[in-house]
Image (cartoon, rainbow, N blue to C red; front, side, top):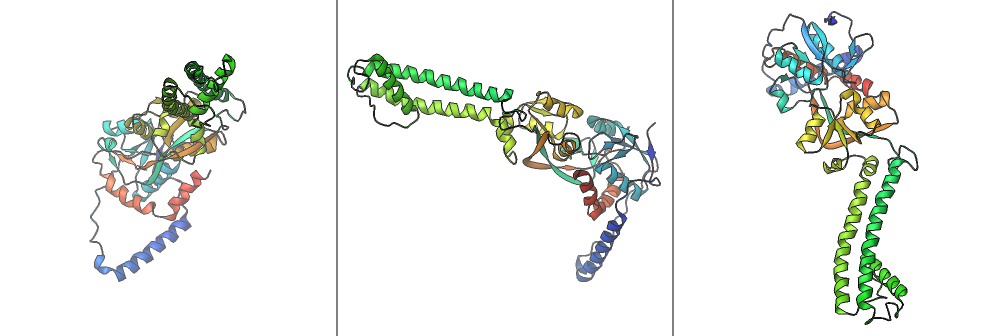
Length: 389
């Protein structure tokens, strides 16, 4: 049986002293405002619809630090305690019903839930199946990465990823040497007689060595000028090699940048471009705001269950998790301190609200009390209590 709660029960309360101070402050401010700006006084408030007397079914799901299911079966967290304050203020009776993220919206649409609470991002598609209260929390998406050394080797100087990096460098270097050798043979062959003084004076080994030196400095755009082709064919090869070298060096640079993308993301203070995510194996929770964001930007990701996000990072199934920043931070602080880190995605924010049945008469009453609560000092105290852990 679900645990039934009403406004008469002993619930988590906002600090009474802070609330009283805030109330006195706002009363004094409103009196001052009415005296100095009476011409801007609002009309008489409209009446609110009657509140339901039945026991409301409130959908919740484990989403720390917003919805936390305690070992004794009770619920706590930022969203839960805010809801408890609203219900107490309005005299609502309710019972929590645990469900999933999709279930919180399906329950509203099918009628077996009256309210859904938690870190529910207000989006246009969700608004089409339910009503939302005013937003009570603003946040942004973030990326969770494993804390590693400079080469992603889990703080091991010569880890597996380090050798993968060396192997990538080795393959590119071998490719460049092969191309350089081919060009060296060609330039030596066409210059060995007309320009014998610079290409070995008949000594094949010395001539090929000089040609390889010329090929290397030309590719590096150094061009010391100590070896200069003189024949028409030799100079044609030199011109073609100069332009081809630009392409080869660019390819080398791009390969190294791709290999070190994860390391670069781990060092920077934030990810500022969507393209920064494309080089990583990304994980995201299905139907979450993060998954929708990745889909809308056509970024491939691996679906992972909410409670398996960090397992996927640990087993290397994914290199990064995209999810809501406060939830990632809370999980790392309480379960994986020092093992993972969070990088905010500076690509816009998201707003959390409570979800209600479409056309619910609760909406107006909840909105009025909600706006009062989130502007009181006790609201920030509540947030800090969970996010500072």
